[in-house]
Length: 108
Image 1 (cartoon, helix red, strand yellow):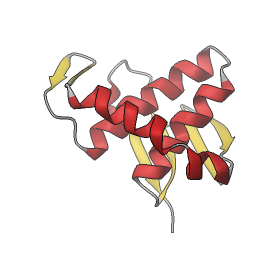
Image 2 (image 1 turned 90 degrees about the vertical axis):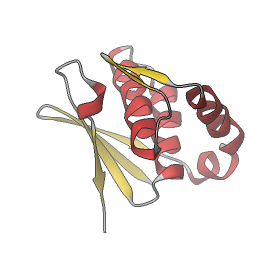
Image 3 (image 1 turned 180 degrees about the horizontal axis):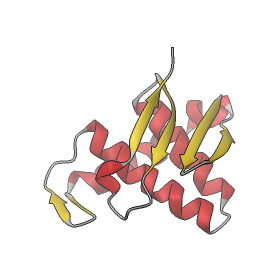
């Protein structure tokens, strides 16, 4: 599955193998457990991140993965988003420093 990450005028396509979606639930559940304790989202503390917040948090990790050229981390984070929001085809990342502005892109 293709998952596009848009940063300004650049698009970074990630190919997500089906086996990662099929076998990654233990890893994805660990991410959820970590976020269950609340999360500092830029300047805002979010006590109980909802599904969108969780995807924004993970999308911010994709931004880090791209900047560090860590494709494996990017693939795993994109797979998390797809597992939680199956209609998501990508994410538009804000470079203004506020992860609450990251937007999911929904496909048809």
